[in-house]
Length: 262
Image (cartoon, rainbow, N blue to C red; front, side, top):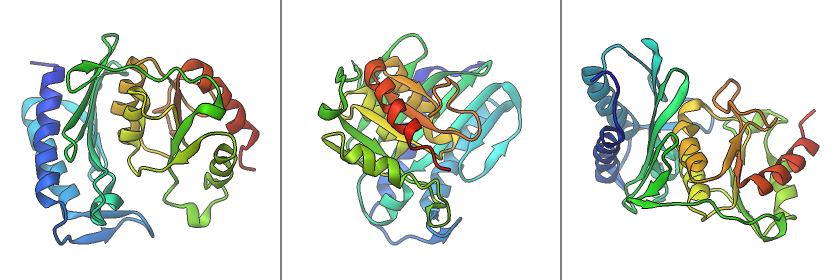
């Protein structure tokens, strides 16, 4: 086969999730890609499995993955892999993390899965065919005003040294909403918007593998997903993202654009 189907992605995610679960709360070999950007041997083990499977079954495809970077191939067939989204949580024994896998054809994300192995929750989406959680259709929340919304966000790994640290936006939304949470997994943040647990999500500095699968889940569940400037290609460099139902999305953009860093 030249293209995968959604069941293939789910199978990959479930096996990678078993790797994560087996290593959970064990002693880890931790190294640092940046001052607060860590990686464990389990990240590498999960990624090695995913790459071996995909490169065996689709040897000509292009792959963009967190630990190995970009593995060049046919640009019409692109995979986005995050073998462990939420590594800081994982390393600290906090059970909020996921495996995120997306497949894009002709520059459009067509398939996406995000798997939480600790809750055994499988989020799936197929372009133009909706999104599901463990097989049941999901729908984004309909909350239309900030005052009744619960939001989620994340912070950049270089926040010690940048003015674009998201703190001003966090503080502003904290005073306009029911609250703002920080889970530590952008893929789960987006899926939680898709199933209505959160009303909205934003983040300023991400990578395509962080949001490709979750972005499709949220979109197919009825959320509007864009960059912070409102443009649709949230995978373009430098990636940024806002996800919410269309009414709330517009109000979130208004706040975020009032607080653009100088």
